[in-house]
Length: 422
Image 1 (cartoon, rainbow, N blue to C red):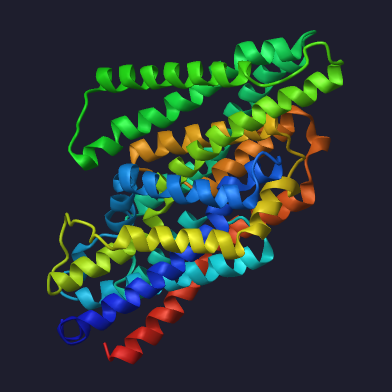
Image 2: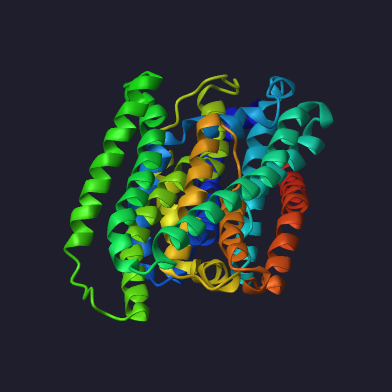
């Protein structure tokens, strides 16, 4: 308790610095792969991707990030064993942020799309094991989360496969691809609008004092989907495309239509990512701030300080802008060749999966969801369309993320304990 009273401001400043560092790592690695399909398919430039990420990551984190923040903070470890030693919780959360941020930075330099969720959970488990032992860890919840890491790439891969094959059947493998694109693409746009509206209405509006019932929420989402589809139909009808062009030219023009659609799915993916993964940086930071401000009391429910979300958002944007290109290249070009239609299928499938998970409060890995979706699109074209060497490296990096996060957190935790004399 003494170090919290004596060094409270210092601890908050250190936590803010490592929270920013972790957010920077999320931007360099996770936001990069959320935008990778858009940039890889040439639907967006890096600058446009950063601009979209800035707006929608902020919106997702603020409107829909609450559920997952609470899971990361209170679900993985039990706060009860720390009640008499809150300083260990504070030092542990700082260690976890530093360890996870350091691993994300290393992985980003190597171009590996690893999971920020894996990283922070591994780090939190590591410090809790050495701080109070195995009884502090909620193994049942950890098991559920590990299970979701296997299930979600499979779900997103399956959804991506269905979306891609439907586009092939309805548009590309027809005698009049351009005419069919004008007919069906607004429906895909409506679907993307529905998914994005649903998570905002069902989860996000609670944070600003509006709580709609399920029926109203679905009805309003359907309304948004119809509006988006109508706007899409008008925008596509205004595109200046020659209907008498040969089939190859028609294919190219259809891809241009999907490139317009990719902007919507990029927004959708950034929003879904913000709602799910910003919590990995702000959750532990919020825990430290609350413990210090409550003089060592570990509160069950606590408001997130006003400056934490902007700090996380700014860190994410900085990481994406400065170090995001390598992971964008791996996701966008390394796994399989992406066109706007393939990228759209992958991104919409991943956004759908992340939104479903965020609504249930399960901190899934956005990275694994998106990689699963890209694999689903690649599989639709046959196993030969996949770069197995890149996929092998990605899987290895996933497997080692949890133990590396734990080991780094343990080392940093011991260093901090020695430095503060705890």
